[in-house]
Length: 392
Image 1 (cartoon, rainbow, N blue to C red):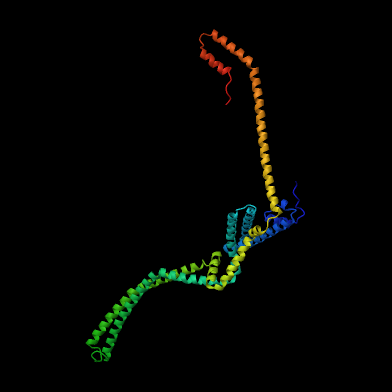
Image 2: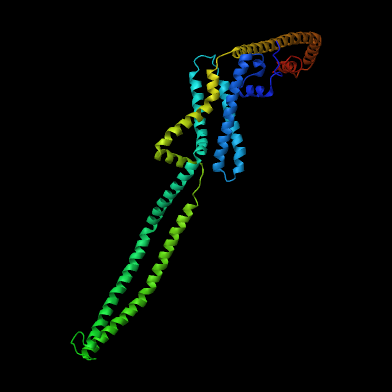
C-alpha cells in the first residue's frame, strides 16, 4: 500500500514534523496527530532558538572577538537540537516499564537547561551584576594589597628598623654635642658653670670637649648617611615592587562568565529579595528546555503511533522474509551445484576407466621385463601416475 503524499502540507509544517522526529509519510493524512506533532515541533524550535541565544551570549563573555560568539552559539544550539531530537525519538510510551530511561532523559534535559539558564540570568541581571563586579574587584584589590604588603612587610620592617636605629644614634650624638655646646657657651658668658665671664681654663676645656664631640658627630654622620641612602633606595625598590604587583593584579580584572556568575552568587547572598525571582526564572528557563520531552510525554497516543508500530512490524516481517528467501535460494543453489558436480565427476571417472586399465597393464608388463625394479617401486609409480588423489 503506497504511503500518502506530503506535498499538500506547507513546508513549515513539514519542517515542524522533522523537528518532532515524526515520519512525515506516516503522519500525512492524520488530522489530529499532525497537529500534535506540529506542537511538539514548535516546542523543539523554541528550545533550539533559546539555546542558540543563550550559548551566543555565553561565548560573547569568554571570547575576545565577539563576532566569534555568533557561529559558536549557532553550533552549540545545533548540538542541543540534536540532543533534544534524540531524546524525543527515543521515547516510546507504548513500551511499558520505561520510567528509568525516561527519568534519565529528564535528568539530562534538566542539566542542560540549568546550564543554559545561567547565561540568560546573567543577561537579565546585567546592570546589577556590573555593579557587583565593581564591588567584588574592589574587595579583591584590598585583599591583594594586604597580601602583597604582608609578603614584603618583613624586609620592609627590617629596613625601617635599621634606618630608625641609625637616625636615633645620630640624634643621640647630636644631643650630646648640643649639650656640650650649651655648657661651653654658658661657661663663656658666665650664665652657667663657675659663673665667670671670659675664656678661662674651664671654658677652654669645655670648648675642646665640645669640638671633639662635634668632630666625632660629623664623622659619625658622614659614615652613616650613605647607609641611610642605601636603605632609602631599597625601600623605594620595595614600594615599587608592591605597586607593580598591585598593578599587575588589576590586569586580571575582567567581566568574564565565571566573574559574572560569582557576582550573581554574591548578589543572591546579600539580597534575599532577589533569591525568589532568581529561582523562579531558573524554573521557567528550565521548563523551556524540558518543553519538548514534556510535550511528547503529555500528548496522548494517536493513530500515528499505531501506524509507527504497524509499519515497524511490517518492515521487520519483510526483512525476515527477505532473509529467509535469500537463505533458501543459497541452499537450493548449493544443492543443485553439488548434484551436478557429482554427475560430472562420475562421468569423468567412467570415461577414463578403460585408459587407466590399459596403462596399468602396460606398467605391469614393463615390471615383469625389468628384473631390477621391485614391487614397491611399481606400486609407488602407479599411485603417482594412475590412481586418484584426494582434493584438499
